[in-house]
Image (cartoon, rainbow, N blue to C red; front, side, top):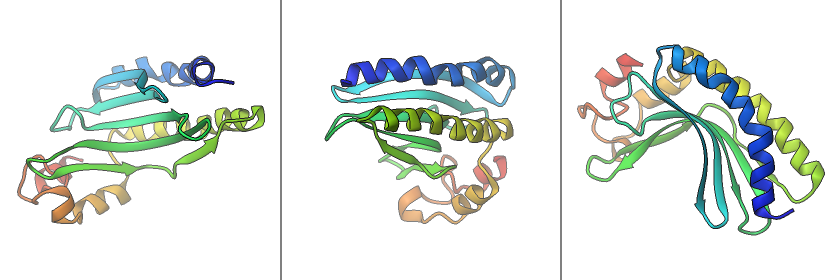
Length: 171
C-alpha cells in the first residue's frame, strides 16, 4: 500500500465516525466552529479528524481536536490523539498542547496493523465525544493549566494566557 491509498482508505473508514458527531456538536452551543478535516501538510504528512473551537476560547486557534496524523517518513505510520491546543504566540509566549488521552502510535505497513489502527480509532472517538459534551478540559487538565510555569505559558496576568485567573475561571 502506498501513502495516497492509505490516506484514501482512512478517509473512507474513519471520517464517517466524526462526521456523525459534527451536526450534534454544532447544535450544542458549546462551540463557535466545528470542522471535520483531511489536510495534506507535506508530501508525506497528512492529518484527518475533527476540531472544535469552544465558545470560551480567547483566540481563534484554541481548539479541542481529535485526529490522526499519518506519515511516510520511514515507512507508513500514524498517531491518534484527543487534545486541547492553543497555537504558540512568540510575542506573549503563550500556547499549549494538552492531551486528554494517551496517544496511540502504530506502524501501518501490514493489513493487521492497519486494521488495528482503524479499530483503535473508535476508543479515542468515544473519549472525544465525552470531552466535547463537557465543552471544557477535564478537571485534572484545568488544575495543570492553573499551575503552568510562566516561562512556557506566558504571564498569569495576561488575559490570553491559559493560566490567567479570568481564563481558568471561564473553563
